[in-house]
Image (cartoon, rainbow, N blue to C red):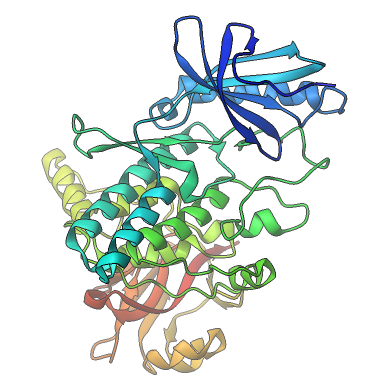
Length: 437
């Protein structure tokens, strides 16, 4: 049976300098290599070499480590520097990771802010300096997540404590990020060897719907769900589903109980509060297919989303410079019928020209009262593409992905139609558009 290391012990070329303590799956240590390079060493209790999926786990970890090292994720995710099997009382598996220091995890940083403002009796979100810092952290965090997903890696246990921030005045953002605690992360294109033998890791109040559904496997969209929770904390100042009762948490998650957040400050131009708010709400959809990607989140936070002025101006300028009309996006809906999907899973199928209004959308919930009797018009054009047109004089604005609809607009897969007030970040009864075959 394997035994625990202690300070001063040597395993291979590593000398243990600190015992951080046991976790559910492994015991963690600080150690130094032959060149005094610091590493974060993990000795695995699970899987033990006797379990049927142990060898597959070792191979899976090697592939995970290689994807981080060989992709853009190497800049943002903790790097595996060594992996080996060794007898220490008994055979066990070890991994050594780069040692991150001279910073703090996001949870620590948020706790310190709250404590500081508790002493001064002022809300942290009212401080413009704090707001600017949170926007920067949000952008840096999502840049790291987008890079991780490019390598088809699902972190699978995201939470503020697993986003480690290091101040770096030599780069424009002022911060580096390291995504940590990734030894039970997943490859999105390869089934984990422990599937069917044990569950998937996750943390209370940060699990996605897929973490909690029997037989379901967390994927890239599961990370996006948790990113949404963390971005609510950073940009709106609260966690929309926090509760000590995890059964209640599951109910809130499944019912999409969160409202589109009112951000704690103005997003720096060209980003839009309304578009950011709408996208954060989409992150928390119980339907993984309705959530944005990490890359889309990163783009909208920087004002480069599909509905942003910067994106439109850039597309127009590129087309003018080349003397050609911009091509339609690849996700433009071309279908005989479409579906409007509500937050609770209810849907409305449409195959002919339809005036959307209060009566028709009442089935989606009480927020239908914010719609006029004639709010907007859906119509299929001759090329089978669908166009949404505004109706003049409505009480509330028609919004598409948080932006005001001022002219007929071709619809794309996943567009969100809602009503509200763009300048105030108010979005009511968002409905997701999907093509039907």
